[in-house]
Image 1: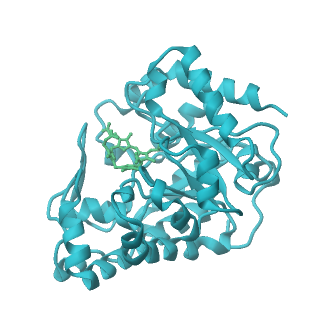
Image 2: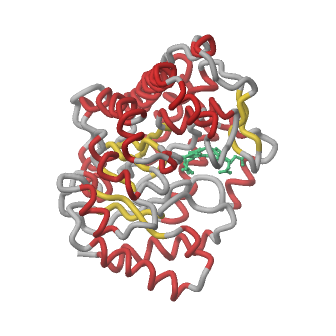
Length: 351
Ligand code: CP3
């Protein structure tokens, strides 16, 4: 699809896209962050012996893994199987995804000279993404496909730290100590991220989510000054396509309003802020996505239903609600608990 073109109407009229647009829905749509992979035995089976990043480059495998949770759980949207570091790998950054650890960067980006390693991303760099999304949109029928990318801050955190971190000390050292270098790094990442999202939308993704998973480590003033301009640039770059843009982070209670203002149509909320309170913080004109604590799924079905009821009650007055977890599915989650949860939300909210 190119800019301003209307997508096929059956997908356009799906509950998920309607909720994103704050239109009336037949039932509250449900999907789960990290629904592809992780908890599914059929996922572990097809991934056997194939390193994570390599699996992201095989269109047939990506298609199969993306479809697995749609078949099993009856979710209202598919999320494209990839990882936030795929575009960085595609432009030649020396990184790998270590099982059980996460993305690890051989030579972290710490100096102005290092910035030169972040070249532009072209569609040819990720031709396997275009191919996989072509296969997927045919297989998915009316189920929308969500494309995604890591936001500049979260990508920078991996590049500057060299791997996962709890404190982000090197990233914050650059942000506070060399604000110009930091701004230039985030601006580079904004361009790469925007180009990666464009590839996915052009290939057929009907919504996009920007994962700023770790931005909750910042105070609002620092977010506004040092991160928001880059995230806003990404959202602005894809605005003309007219597909819903979702913006998500963890521990972002104090940032929700700014994350909406960065250009999102849908603001993702973790489990720490009830959705009615989140709506007050975000203000009018945005749908919300969330926000069941993913660890709730380890308790009894009755307790899951009670907690889900609380989320739905808090969401009752929202302009638009996409049901999701407050963060990704945890790897040891019982897949049947997810299937039951989808069924429960659908029946409870059927109109
Ligand atoms: O959501 C989906 O189902 C689609 C697939 C997807 C993956 N990563 C696959 C993956 C998505 C949307 C992501 C996003 C992602 N990756 C984020 C943002 C979402 C979030 O959870 O906050 C982040 C921060 C990453 C970085 C990353 N990649 C980490 C921290 C890890 C290791 C820990 C883990 O989750 O297992 C990865 C690896 C990764 N990405 C795996 C998968 C299926 C596991 C790889 C393996 O088993 O070898």
